Length: 251
Image (cartoon, rainbow, N blue to C red):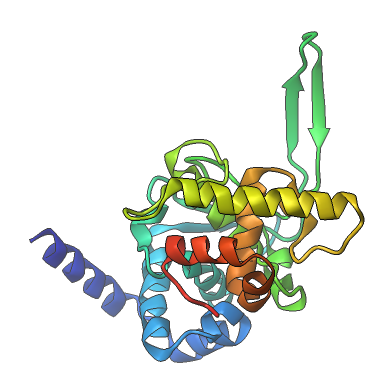
């Protein structure tokens, strides 16, 4: 009965707020992971995008204006990771705040001596546990020009990571997935890449992924959807765990 009610609501939303075909084709053209999907998966993604736009509030700030095509594109990027999981995985938060460009939030921390320090770092995206996702629109558009990079997928991966607590590179795994295998795959890759980076060797992923376990998961997720062949070639065990978690086979 619950599934029937849910399906009725979905059909009602899709019928009431359909995405015009030119807008959808534009999104596919500009979102490589969506463009690579088969026809049935593209249709499922289109429904998810419709529901995302219905349930989430896209909030441009600092004079930025987002047209309908822009909103559909952003939602398409955001829904790629949950294509086989469902919109329920994004429950508990509502807002996507979009800056025109990179932003500089103010942060304060108190050290062991009680001294308060203020930090200001340039950021392309940020995700809060049960709060908003914050994005730089310039970096969203830059996904096409930087192979393996996708700030929207990156921040949505953080959201999934935080479903079971703090972001630590260990999202809630599905029944049948082995926590020990996940830990081993990511730990082995992490340690090898840190050694390679220290030795000045080129890395198959963005070095930012070595900042923490959470960033490693997010950066690997970006590459899983944007340049899956590269991730599978260089980090096959990580690729396999992400296949199981996202329930997708992008390569």
